[in-house]
Length: 83
Image (cartoon, rainbow, N blue to C red; front, side, top):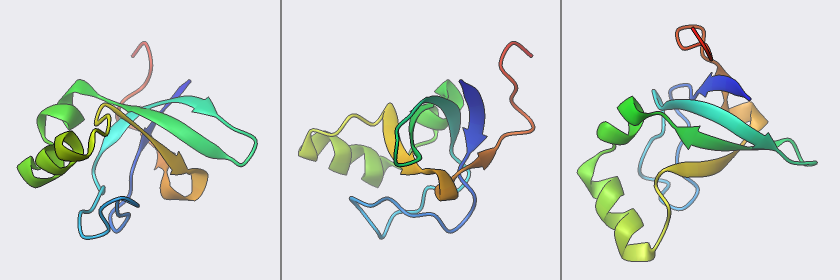
């Protein structure tokens, strides 16, 4: 596992009008297609926009984690596991 963040300009595949930039979390899994399961940090979860939260709840989506392509992530130099 490693700490990652979403750079500005990355949008949600389910809701393309909502950006993901500035979200951070832990890359918990990486599949054979280089897609990462990111578990969002507590700070990120606390800052999720109310519109995104409402849509996710309405559509039955888990807002605590998300699969993102490796190209949509970068290492989080601020948050280090165990640091």
